[in-house]
Amino acid sequence: MAFVGKYLFFAWGGVSFTLILLISIVLNYIIGLKIQKQLNTKYGYWWLFAGVSINIIILGVFKYANFIIENINEILKIISIPKITNPHILLPIGISFYTFHSLSYLIDIYRRKTLAQRNIFDLSLYICMFSQLIAGPIIRYSDIWQQLWGRTHTLVKFSSGIERFLLGLGKKVLLANTFAVIADDIFNGKYTDMTALNAWLGIVCYSLQIYYDFSGYSDMAIGLGRMFGFEFLENFNFPYIAKSVKEFWRRWHISLSSFFRDYVYIPLGGSRAKVSRTYLNLLIVFFLTGFWHGANWSFVVWGLFHGFFMVIERLGFEKILAKTWKPIANIYTILVIMFAWVLFRSDTLTYALSYWKAMFNFKITDEQLSLFYNYMNLELYIALAIAIPGALGFFHFIARLLKKQFSTNLLFIRSISYSFDILSLSFYAAILIICSLYLIAGTYNPFIYYRF
Image 1 (cartoon, rainbow, N blue to C red):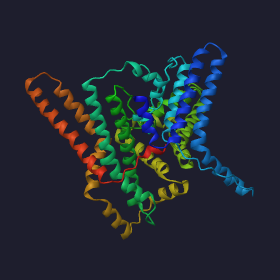
Image 2: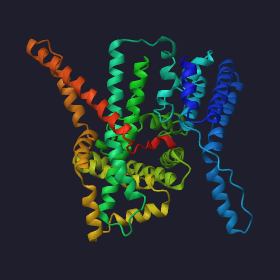
Image 3: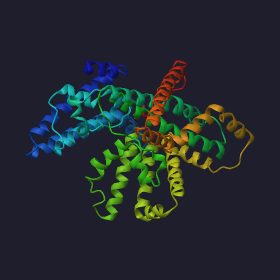
Image 4: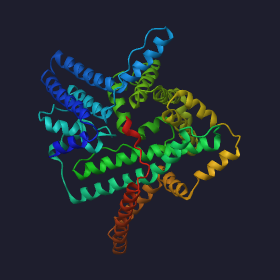
């Protein structure tokens, strides 16, 4: 039933996309068994090479072919050669994520971290688990293979999964969507002569939108997995409290950053290589990180932008940050990340540059001031009052403090904890009801990471 259910779920987005996924699973199943069988021979490496190449080619054709052809045509146009016909290949849903699942599966077999899966249905369950197939987090086979056949189901785990799912749903529908309306309105260039007031409002809203959108989806994926007995690793750890760009990437999209660390950075030599090679390795990793997010030069430059600051910090700035007053280091990090988000959100590099320019245009016009006040309504104030402390870990700290207090056996505290449980139940029920009303009303509901 699980096998049929997940393919029906995926086929909802397009039957042809499902065929690509099925072909990928069959190929990786066969190649995984071949790698396992040939581990002690030179053929094991060549089977790994073939598997990695096939997966990258599939991803490259469907995700990057249009981009490559467009750029080739720009070059051909300069030298007056007829352009190549662009096939306009559609991007299959979740291909970036299930390709990385397949790659980690094959590489971990070759590294002897796990054994090849002999049951193709179990392998398909891992590669295209519906709860995190569309937008992550990236799950490694070595972390989950035992759970494919030996996971436990308890009422406590199931209820915990529901709570985590509802928390993610609230993040997405009530917070991310609220910020999305303003961020999209400003970034879509609806208004001319944008000044710093609205430019900064736009990037603040987008920074909060992308965090609550993706961390909310990750929470929902982790919660759904837990309801089915799976335990997925965390994907976010309050990245906006980071005191350096390096720390930010230890907290943001952890499954992706650790993937590139273990499968690209370390094999390239990591920090064990000579200093210049280490810097090059960092730039290669962040180039690939940006390119993975999308076939667009703005994503590539976004990745290299992060890589540049990683190199700067490694050159010695990290030591200065360690001695700096923590709020100052945090402000530095947030500013770097926000300027990088401009690249991430912009469709072109030209627009990103114009947006950066607007962020320093402090000539406030009556029109821009009127627009700013129009955005600053009660709904946004409430969203900001919840989102900013939430992103900085305030509510998580309070929850941990209360949990610690309620863990005591004192009768008085225990009686309060029962009241807290009722309050908690009411809180999650309210999230479900309010989110349902928003969704039924057809509120703007974009998922940022669906396009990756």
